[in-house]
Picture 1: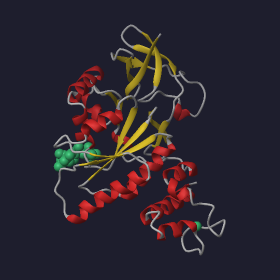
Picture 2 (picture 1 turned 180 degrees about the horizontal axis):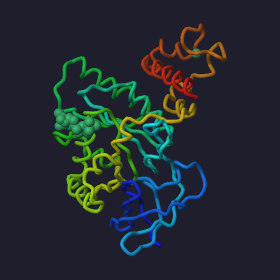
Picture 3 (picture 1 turned 135 degrees about the horizontal axis):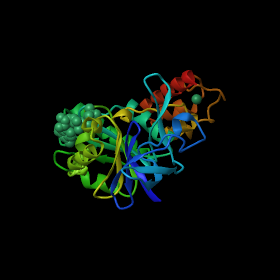
Picture 4 (picture 1 turned 135 degrees about the vertical axis):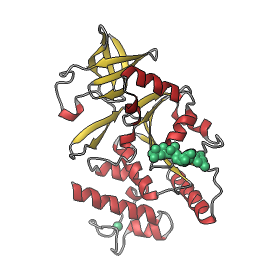
Length: 303
Ligand SMILES: Nc1nc2c(ncn2[C@@H]2O[C@H](COP(=O)(O)OP(=O)(O)OP(=O)(O)O)[C@@H](O)[C@H]2O)c(=O)[nH]1
Ligand SMILES: [Zn+2]
């Protein structure tokens, strides 16, 4: 029996990496996992597995318990397991398009929902910007670093910040997320210049090149750590509303709850609201409260 990790999945076909880094084509028996919700039984990218070597394909024998699993609704709204065992969510924003704080806050809650760490990369710092954009970027850095999140400025063009990013990714499994055009693909290539060749190896193994751009992949970085690139989850938001994750994603607001005059305070217009007072005192950013209230409402409505 060999221990391995699922690096990609195409329908029933899996690619599993063993401890030496060698890739194997594999299949999973239907009844590999007999208990639990249907959508969590099949192996996904990121899973730790055990397998036996078969005649032309490896055959999975065990699916190890997951540390976490990103669940997303499919096109019919049913839950589907995406990728698993994520230690860290890397939220990529850029100077152009300029950082969207609503999106950052949503991703932070998503990371908390996974019980994963979060870090923010501000890409394209090489661009000369108008003053308003430059100050918004500086505010972004100050706001989120002030909340305790690592914030890493980077440029795939000059290579600035790429080493710091490698250090941040080493020794764990990270998921890159961020809106279209911020430079996720460029960052992935900057982190691992041999990536294109390795994508080719994967395509050759599966015989289906086009899948490599539409399916989740787990890449071992030469500098250490694994990077998950998953086109389907780039815009992920928590699937199942989770109050605990919301509070963890807004820890500075969570710390004030329970200090308002009214125990059922909605933190909107009530007198004696400790959260609003903190905003007025400049201790909580107004946008953070706005995003917190918007996400709370969203979660209540979908609960
Ligand atoms: N000036 C500058 N441009 C960059 C940098 N990184 C990426 N770009 C450019 O930004 C554009 C988008 O980069 P991508 O890497 O495709 O962005 P992405 O986030 O992967 O986009 P999607 O695939 O749509 O999700 C491309 O034209 C890149 O050349 C950078 O550091 N500086
Ligand atoms: Zn209040």
